[in-house]
Length: 103
Image 1 (cartoon, one colour):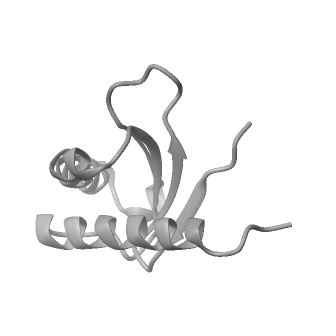
Image 2: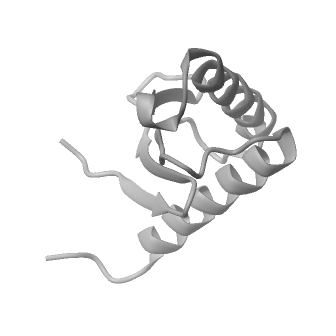
């Protein structure tokens, strides 16, 4: 199994993996624990992040699989905040992939 790249900020943790062969679109998976808030709050966070991903996905060079974990207490509250946070963790993951490989 190929290892993905990890990006972290105070709101999100993201793992970015290359999409399987033959994939034509990028995919998003999310984990939002009950520590983030009650059900309506968690669902709003997921909807907001899905929309941010939908706007950002066409900019990817190749299809990728992204798994997001929303951190408690730091969930993005607005669309602009979600977009900025998602872009940041993806930029961090990309930067880490260009750095020296791990042992």
